[in-house]
Image 1: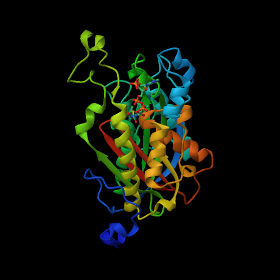
Image 2: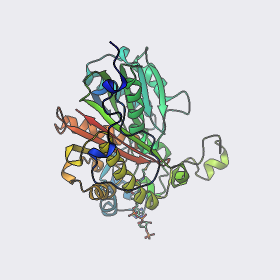
Image 3: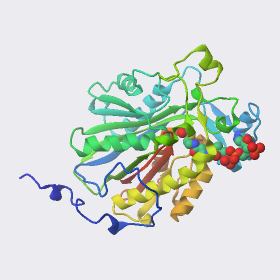
Amino acid sequence: MIKTVNEVSPLIGTNPDSGAVQTVPFPGHTSVPEPEPRLLSAVVAGTGFDVPERILTNADLEQLVATSDAWITERTGMKERRIAAPDQAASDFALRASQRALADAGISAEEVDLIVVATVTGDMPFPSTSCILQHRLGATRAAAMDVAAGCSGFIYALATARQFIATGAYKTVLVVGVEVLSKITDWTDRGTCVLLADGAGAAVLRASADRDRGVVASYLGADGSRGDDLFMPAGGSRIPASVESVQQRLHFLKMNGNAIFKVAVRRMAESVNRVLRAARLKAEDIKLLIPHQANLRIIEATAKLLGFPMERVFVNIQKYANTSSATTIIALDEARRAGRVLAGDVVVLVAFGAGLTWGGVAIRW
Ligand code: ACO
């Protein structure tokens, strides 16, 4: 018998405010309706990550620019970061992270229906890094696409993958966040070079009829008017590569760190509140909050604004610094392997980045 919409999606038509928690007001930019229709669940069946072998410490950075271990530690929480070798590119790390996630899920690459890779530092402008990964992984049945949303990339990719599963279009989706930021870092700019790093994380999503598990809500936001606060000016069709663009150092990441700091805190807090409301959950229901690892002070300020205890916030920024779209999925894999995510637990991933973009997802394990 065919079910009615409300039998399939019991949340449709209910009061979105009934599960509301402390709300951080901020206008506009809602791209996901609340409450959300839920068809099939997208369950996280496996996770994995990979980072380069080379460790760059704060002491190493003292040799490159006018900085100090004390300044970096105090202002960012970072102690060391991983940096790719000259011949390594995004798909190298994405491949190993994906292989680990597939092994964790206990499935083969041939079972993957779709690959979504979040990156702004892919192997090359095209073909997409997801297509390169599809070939190297042997995921011969999979469609493949990249998502560019800066540091919010993994959240955007996960929300995208979830839609394909919810509608029944695909059963198995591999979602990857990968960056090799060291290749677009200006190693003479102390304002950015101490922050950025390389790495990849991957998650296998599978369709399930169990609506109590999996991604239970997502929220995405953007404000394109603030694009100039964090961008790489050259290398696209606006300023193609030329001798002048290289001489003017336009192929490096530029950031207005102070301006981003303030918006990041507000938008990440807003994103957490919105996914909680969409999932009809309260802050107390969150077992672990996994924020984008851009700056420990941003993480602490976000937790404070939410009234959320730091004991339930996952932080690994001291080891890996800011790997942009890879931070939340690397952290999720580490948290799982450390036994901090158990069956029935609710985990919220939240991020903020270039675009500007921001967003969150709530996952029940
Ligand atoms: N070492 C020593 N001094 C430094 C360094 C450094 N590495 N960097 C900046 N300074 C100096 C500045 O020049 C300034 O000196 P001045 O007072 O003489 O002018 C002083 O430190 C204070 O600078 P601020 O920029 O005010 O320092 P702040 O405390 O804001 O920290 C930071 C800067 C770490 C960049 C912070 O603003 C931040 O984290 N912003 C958000 C970054 C972010 O989230 N980006 C988004 C993600 S990145 C991505 O998408 C790839």
